[in-house]
Image (cartoon, rainbow, N blue to C red):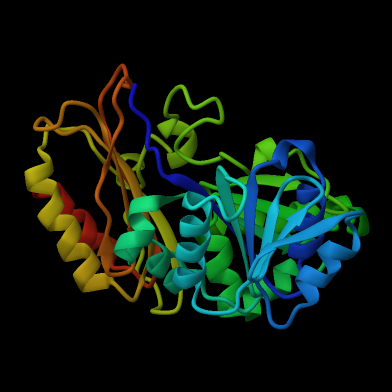
Length: 340
């Protein structure tokens, strides 16, 4: 099987004070995180200073790049994210820095993840050398419920996550944790949840948590998609109208045969029509004109080239698309897709 050779990227985000830096500090001191590069996109240098304070040795390798004792590279964002990612890749190729095999990007707590994901994947040099592996979001166990209710950025972050980490769980009681967990599940039923304290978690739970498994031997679309096999319509539940500020997520299952030539124009129309509202789309497509299943991914206005999942197939080839967005017209989207 031919796997995607690009460098996997983990986007680590979460609202202010939710424990991103504490988590990252623990991860970078883990032996399993060797050969990882890290970009810290926080306001000021607090995040980097906190991490460096916990390391016994650190060595400056190149401009704005530090080699940590664990073997990880760490840098602060001194220019645009795309520029920093290009710089890291070219220095890697020129052997000016150690060869890293994965990248973690920690964003500021007020960051809207949509534009970050879009910029990350839309720039030609970036999209040819990096691939999005997973979006990991930290949620404060004590204040997370209030934040996702009151703060639009916090809701967006939680809605697009592949993995949700309920941090500081030792400070909350079981009832608080259960209420938060249920609220997050309602917002993003496809995300995997973990309850952690002091930033302690096995890196394997959040690194290489996307389309390809850490062994590099095969794709795991079911884990990446995390989609229910039955839709609302299949259960006899029609989609309800939503307010333009409401974040919704739903799955469209398309069991009938189709071709990528038929589906791609509809997905392009979807991105064009609902771009600002479309936080994320991901899916597995079984197309009659493709030699293997396709993994598709879109963010806002951009539909990215599909990944061919050679060597993998389902017993029952069914195309599934998961859509997450603000005020999406679910009935209109379903109608357009079902008319293919």
